[in-house]
Image 1 (tube, rainbow, N blue to C red):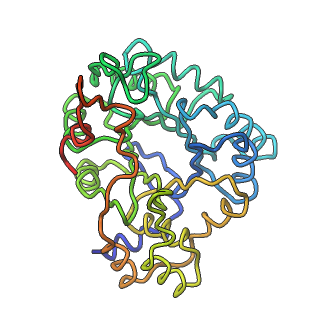
Image 2 (image 1 turned 120 degrees about the vertical axis):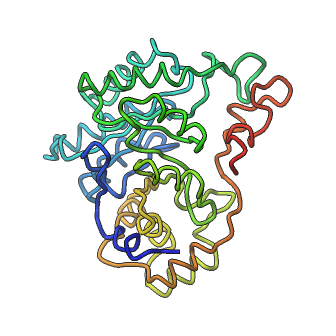
Length: 319
C-alpha cells in the first residue's frame, strides 16, 4: 500500500543517494536507441529538461550519447548539472578489466568522469560469448575483487557513485559484507506488472536507492494498454506512460523511460505538479505480478552445461 511518505516522495524531481549526491527522478534510457541516440539525448536535455542520461557500453551507443551530451553542453548546459550513468559489461567483470572498460566509456562519452557506474549483470562471460551461451562461456565472477576496483574509481574521481543492476537480495547481501563503499543505486526491471518486491525491500533495508527500468513493461506485456492503467490515465487526463512513470516515482524510485520520439521524450517527463490519488495508486499496485520481461535467460542460461540451467537459478530462486 502507498504510505503518505511514498506518495509525497514522488513530487521531488530528485532523490538523495547514500553518498549525499542527488540523482534526478526521471532519466532518459538509451537501450536500443539506435541511430537517433545523439539527437534524442540533445533534445531530452535542451528541450525537455532531462538531466539524467542512462547508457551502457553493451548498448553500442555510447559514442552517440557522447555526441548528444557534447551538443547539449555546447548549447549552454553545465556538466555539473547533468547526471550520466553507464555500466560495466559481463566480459569485463574481472578486476584488471574494470578500469580500462571505464576509460573506454569515458572516451566514447567525451567526459572526464561519470556520475554512476553500475555492474550491468552479476555474471561473467567470456569474450565473444554466444547467445545463448555455449559450454564454458559463463565463468565465475569475482564480485569482491571487481567491487574493489569499482571503489578505486570513486577514490580517483573518475566515478562519483557505484552500484549494481539486476541483483538479487542474496547477491546484494553478499556484496554488502565486503563493500567499503556500499552501492549507491540498484537498477532493476520494475513496473506494476513486475513489482520486484523482494529486492526492493532489501534495498530499502540497506539504504540503497532504486532506479526502475522498463517502467512501461515491454512489447510482450505493454502496460500502457492495461485496462487499469488506461482507466487511471483517463481519470487524471494523463497518458498511460505518464501514469506508469509517476507510479514509479510515488513508490520512491527514480525511473529511466526510453523513447526515440521527441514528442514521447517530452511527454515522459511531464510527471511533476500532479499526483496519482492513493486509491488509484493502490489499484495500480494490485495489478497482478506476471513475470520478468528481462529474465537474462538467453544471455546466461545453458540448460545442459550450466553453471545456470534455468532463469530461476539466475535470480537465486527469489521470484
